[in-house]
Image (cartoon, rainbow, N blue to C red):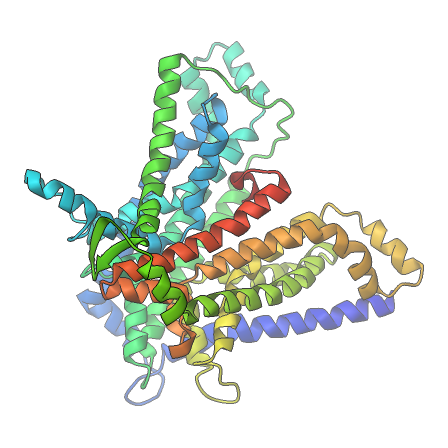
Length: 549
């Protein structure tokens, strides 16, 4: 056993070294840079003083908080009844609605922004259709468009978390309240709602975090409505040749908000969580035909509004276009021909970088999940905190931190494909770790111990005994990591260099230049590339997409 502990102790030390240089050191670097004066190169609070003194920066902060709060409220308004109806009532096509209702969670948010620009932009489809009738549609630009996209993209988080909480309720609780004379509304507000409240708050915090750290949507349709994540990127890009102190200060403010949200969520869930075995699951009730139709209409309507723009993007990819003007009804494959023949490099880059990061992440996640499950203690708790820390760091902040840290010195990665792989690996590996760790917890340690006692070395026992059992979870984690990496924009836009532009960067730049046709082609390739692996995962696992996630 001494040899066993020595082997895993070496791996544990190596993992901590990797996490330090990939996560902690870059954050500490920009934290230090934010306290350095650009003029004197000495310690100074000038950057923070500038942030709190000038109304422009404070307005960016207020704008971020405003759109994030509003989008979170609207996501709750959609997600809570959506989850309640699907969990409690018989609805025609429930499985299909659940699967389609989860898709916006996977599809890139900036493509959603592109879709709404095609529909409601100045040269959008709806503007052209309604122009002959003298009807003006509301502008998609500014805070209203940002809130719309955030709401429709992130409400599935509320749906998934709240529906899981509803399905965990023991039927005997509601039956007891009913037997004591409580009516339906009173049972809902005194029994059901308190039990699912932790899930509601947790989902609200997740949605708020995703909104405040998002880069692609505000920069595409925000126009003059600036938010903190976009301004941090602008400050960093404008100061690449000088001192990125202001970018560091803005990044630290954004990091403070996201970390505070993460800690508050952890505190609230641990303080307010309700554990129950759900031995008697809630009955799925049948409503009257009219009520069933109204409930179905609400759920199907939400799904349609959320996914219709993505369908429009796919149609736009085979539509003739000239700049931002789309000639719907005139079909052409020119956009795909240009993507695959004239500019295929972004497609190759996306697949290469995502695959490389995923392979590294699977191996790393396998080792970390084993240490978290099999070697519990203070060290494993610290390891768990470190590997999950990237989830609390905004993509632009992580990109700025890595670019500023490894721009010079002994290790120079900025401007290479390796820094993109490093960023993707660190940012997405928590998905792989959580998937494999949850499966490893179900494997009896005695199976591995029996192999070791028979003289098989510990690492070989792990590879030959434990790993084959974990294979389904490893594959699931790899697929989720791959598709989320493929759709990553906020980190990529900071770190990519010239020939290493990805499909996300290509879509982003072409939308910015008003070249909607080719942008839609790359976006369609990206959408299909994300959906096919998820479809394979669902077919192999035998579960719908909502259950897999």
